[in-house]
Length: 324
Image 1 (tube, rainbow, N blue to C red):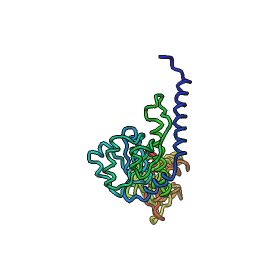
Image 2: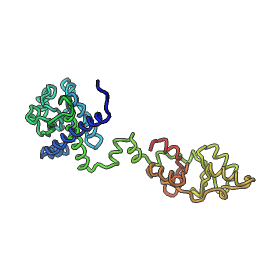
Image 3: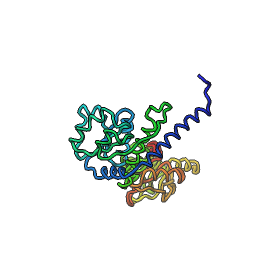
Image 4: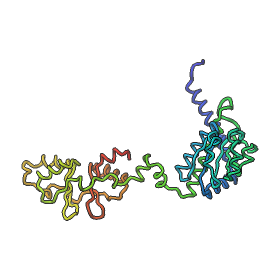
């Protein structure tokens, strides 16, 4: 084995990129009205989209089905071998079937065609052989032909699977644009991701309600404020009069008060609170609240209002812990 060369290895990798990029350019140039008809068929579909493919094409099919689902089109993946042993029962006349195959001659794929024809569903083929049996038995054919695989032996599916994948991505994203699929819709299908959390979670999802908060009146004495804050242990006391928020006393304020005053026994909340504190509304997105808390003096707690009334408070720690 010859000594490894950094430059040679990097160049080999770049060669792979160039081969696949050139393949995609050709596939793009081959797009025609069939792509329009494929999109139209899926938009008009009253059922679901079922994607299938054998081997590497099947792996690409799984990804295409997943992308369709996450961008607003109901889709499932069906393994052709499992389809031949009962799973084809999920296919209905109102469905659209996307069948992927480089050669278009895979035994498992071809074995499903008579049954699919009998069911009457629409068949879209993604194939590199537009003269294949699959192509001839499909309603719509999307040409994924590539001149060369990126594999040095020109054998392992590389450029061809990339071509099929990009066609699937094009179908999914064009459909999402035509459906006016928005960030909020994407977030709904990805609630566990960062974007989903940022677009779905609200202040109300993190609020500590009034029952958990230290609430004091303007005449409450310092000692009683301390006791209530210790009992609730949320890092702040809300100063409320006639159900309206008048001010806030935080743990940080307590430290400053003890440093400033030698005798605190006679002090009352009105003299110690921060009046008219920064607040956040109940229905505000939690991510927006987080930005406010981090940029406006790094508040550790913030009062939450619902209309004009105090509804509770949120803690910076809770928002950060959520992974927003």
